[in-house]
Length: 460
Image (cartoon, rainbow, N blue to C red; front, side):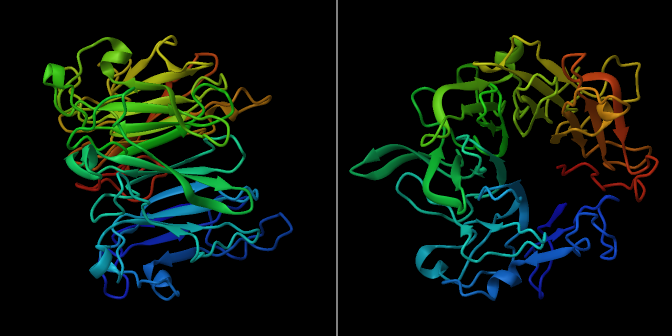
């Protein structure tokens, strides 16, 4: 398990950040190095610790700035060099270095790759780090938010993981005059995609830059924040991962609906293309349910992909934490769209809308609609083991965990909670039969619920 600590102070530098890695064992996660791993490779590796101090002592051309770098603000896992061993990508959202006087490299952001090895002892590879390639003919700029979101997937189906990197605060040029941008949309956002290569790893020489500035999509608008959230999954079951991109600040200008939010989906294809704009999709609540989009709902604030119904296609959960449900302000909702062969995400399989008073308001086991709970603030999709009980093992599906960081627990305001909804092949998707609610007051959960804890503010 990799744990980001982006606010950690390192050598007196506040906000420098760090990452801790705790290794698994037959007994679960452990920091005990005497526990055998039962694999013939020795003992379980001790926990590993990385911070920007490790980077600062390397022969980089420009010495990194430790203060407020926020190393570990985002994380992603994948096998980028196709060696069968997982690698870890660490996002450093406010990375800057000593070249800033000439190149304005203050808070431009960066990612560092920690390649996995057979011993399990990941190391910082100082030749394996990246800053933004740039867009519209301009390189990295301060405070673009590079690496605010990360998602790994095999977008070209070559067996090596690729990496999508959100740059949600990047301006997008709308009009060029004599090769110079004359009209742009600030904070419209872009996404950079870097492809992995067998025996090499990530290579940004063929990186793609995606934005909403395209004739087959839409128009970049100020404060859209395209790329604020990302999720990779094979939505059409063709063996190549696809990419869902959250645009939580999108406006529906024709209806004067501000900050309703949308999700763009781009599909994977064989090398050398990878992600392609062909048949790309545009989702909002109107497209899913035929309802009028809600202002300030921020549809797409969070995303998670997983096969909730076990049909071999990934499905997409979309967080709308600021949606008013049943008139309760910012109580939050999560919409789920299911994958389908050929078309990808489709409303042919009945979409779902989840909130804390399902299946009915009298059932309080899942929580209660409350002002400002922000159900759906974070999402993650994994198989949590519910449908692996017994013998023979029933068909495995993904399950969904939903962060509700401002849930009140008893008298403790904003203590936070996590709801879990389980997938099912027999029920053809997520169902409420075995839903769960966890807080720090739940049995077996360390600590206790305290005001302002915001339990569930981050999930993976």
